[in-house]
Length: 372
Image (cartoon, rainbow, N blue to C red; front, side, top):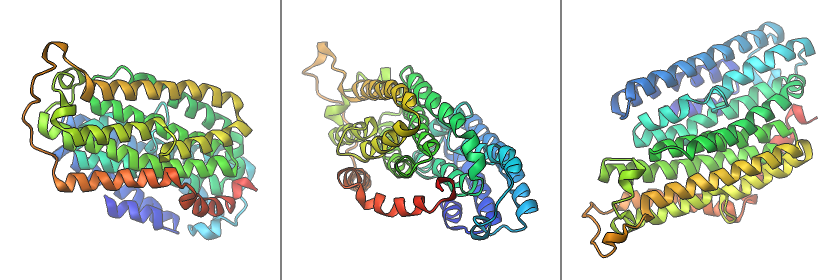
C-alpha cells in the first residue's frame, strides 16, 4: 500500500501513475477486511467499490488523453494543447475519478465507513496518505493537462467543496463513535483542499497543497489516539461509554495528545491547520468571497464537534465520583509516545514556520498551466 502511494507521487508516466493508483486499492481491501473491526467486510467492500468506480472514470480520461495526445509522458502532455471541446467533457470525468478518493461530496461516504472499519494503522494511512493521492492526481493530471476544462468547471468544484466542508462538519457533530467523528472531520478538511484548487490562484492552490500535508499529519495523530491509545485499552469508541471513564486521569498523555491534535484540527494559530486554512481562505477571497463566509460557518461546526469529542472522551466529570480513582489501564508505551511526539512536532513546526514548505510548494504551483 505504501509502495503504491510512492509510485503515484513519483510517476512521470500517466499509465504508471494509474497502475500504482489502482494498486493501492488491493492491499487496502485486505487490510480492512482481515484486520479491521466494526462492519469490516462492509467497510472494505464499500471503499473498494467507490475506488474502482473512480478508477474507471480515470481510465476513460486517460484513454481520451492518449488517443488525442499520442503519449502518456506527463512532461510531454503538459506541452500539448487539447481542444476546448475535449477539455469540456474530459476534465470533469478525470477530475471526478480522482476526487472520489479525495472524499469529494457527495461521493464521500466510503471515507468515514472505511476509517472506522480499518485497523488503527490502516486509518492513519487512509487519512494521512491515500486520500491525498486523489487530490494530488487531480492537481497534477486533470487540472494541469486540461486548464481550459478546469476554468469551465472550477465554480462547480468550489460549490461541492463548500457543501462538503459544512455538511461533513454538521454530520460529525451528531456522531457517537469517536472514529466516525474523526472520519467525517477528514471529509470536511479535504473540502478545504478542493476549495483551494478551485481558487485557481497561487495562494489558494499553495494553501491546498499545504493542507494536504497538514491534514495528513493531524488526521493520523487523531486516529492514533482514538485507535491505538484509547480503543486498545478500553475496547470501546462510544463517546457515551468513554465519558464515564475519567480518561484524562487514567491516560494523561493520551489526553494531552488529543488536546494538541484537536487544537491543530480546529485551526488554532501556531499549528499547521491554521497556516493552511488561512492561506486557502485568502486565495478564495480573491475568487469566491461568498464561499469564505459560508466556510466560516463550517469552521464553527468543526470547532463544535472537535470540542464535543474532546470533552466527552476525556473531560466529562462524574460529579458523584469526583474523588474516585481512575481505572487501572496499561500506560502509554514509549513507541506510542515517540510516534505521537513526531506528529505533534511536525504540525507545530509547519504551523510556526509555514515558509518551510510554502517556499517549495509555490514555485511548483506557479509553473502549472491552469494559472497562465
